[in-house]
Length: 228
Image 1: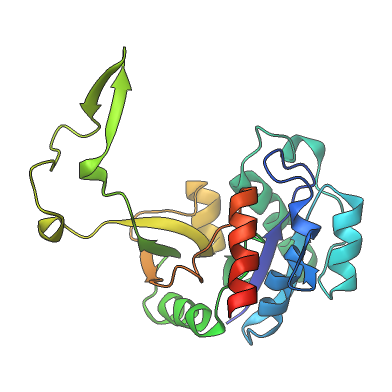
Image 2 (image 1 turned 180 degrees about the horizontal axis):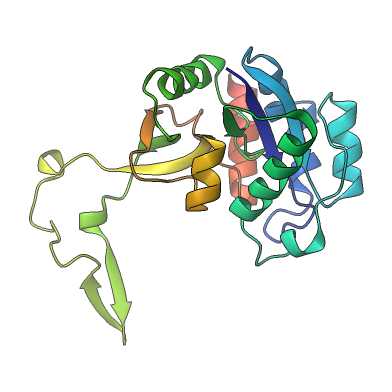
């Protein structure tokens, strides 16, 4: 199986400036995803798509492939990761031939384990599915969530479960951002990593599923490194 590992790393980040090359545990944050990509036998290349010269330079120094800068229209605050992923996919296949799967490794998920990644690849290859997504048990069950309209508190779902004990609620999961593996055809057709028939890669570990998006997340990541 031929899989392209793709890391999307914009230079702009309002909540955590320069986070992709900020040092965590002695290496730039993006380096954690590059290093795990090197351990996956099925990965043919680790491609970093960025609009930032400094990130590109760091990525190359760490052994990733970054031959161009992402177009500006795919790099502003309103851009989405799917369009950037398809742009990178189209370029790579035009230059290097077809691949079997696109593995998105978000740089904000530094603590993935190779065992879980291989489990996700095994699901993808043996179950003949279109995509596999990393998910974790949600801490706030959707049947216990609310919305506020005109200062009035109302259940978000009409079939809410506010009177149901937590142990009696169905299991609920949230996409944690640590693992996305999809076929090129499905990504181009659906323009989404979540497609009908997507399989879950369940990640119970709060450490593995950590997604660094705020300064508080960063401080927690540093705490985990110091503790573990």
